[in-house]
Length: 115
Image 1 (tube, rainbow, N blue to C red):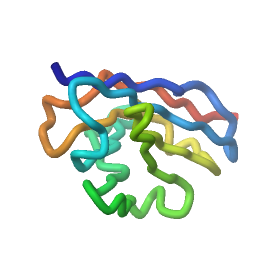
Image 2: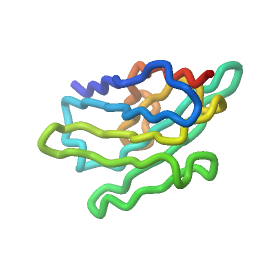
Image 3: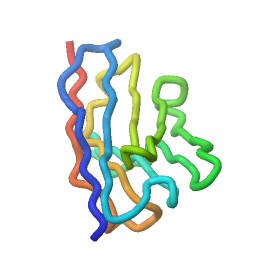
Image 4: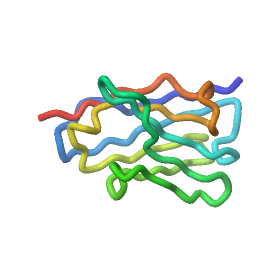
């Protein structure tokens, strides 16, 4: 059974940093492309980042490029999203997803950025 559980969210001041984790079970995290999405208040779900299967090449939305870093630890079967220089507009619920199947998405973790 595929499960994805996000953690690490919280409240932080602008300019701060957080690391989100996505612990997975039922599959091996390196065997699939993995995605981070977010949903900001009053907005739709938007793609944030992805990491390729196999070569671990990462991709980022323009809004987070240079500030966010996606990685994965195969031994822990976990996906990470390191976020620095956080801005109020990064406030959102962050989700991880296995492949391009929306049904293989976690429940999300809340990130709030405010002074």
